[in-house]
Image (tube, rainbow, N blue to C red; front, side):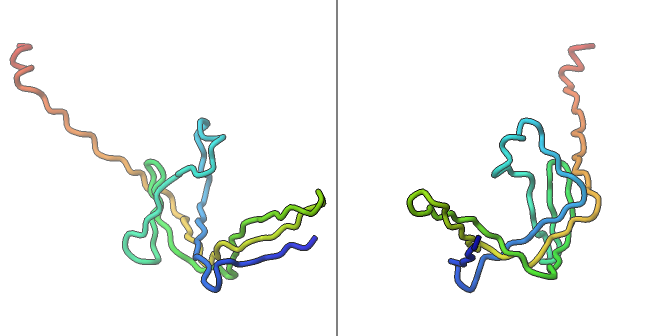
Length: 129
């Protein structure tokens, strides 16, 4: 079978990046059937272009941007219906290119806020005495 590859974006395909995590990201049971478009965290570049933070729930990961040895293409499969019910032709459309990976190889930092101090109401204390 012949698979054609076409790029409709011209010479400048959008740049994508790959995120590499050490360990496992577990999905809560209520989201098992709804993984598409599921927001799992917040990716930020706080200071330099080489350092990134990835916040997942109450955990923050710090990673670095590294070039890939060979670029990867991001493709979309496009099926073309065949004539008179015959097998259709398959084409792959290039929608992006990945030249970098963001590697998170350190243990996550816990984001735990301090408990608020308990303020006692003086009026309530006077009434209870």
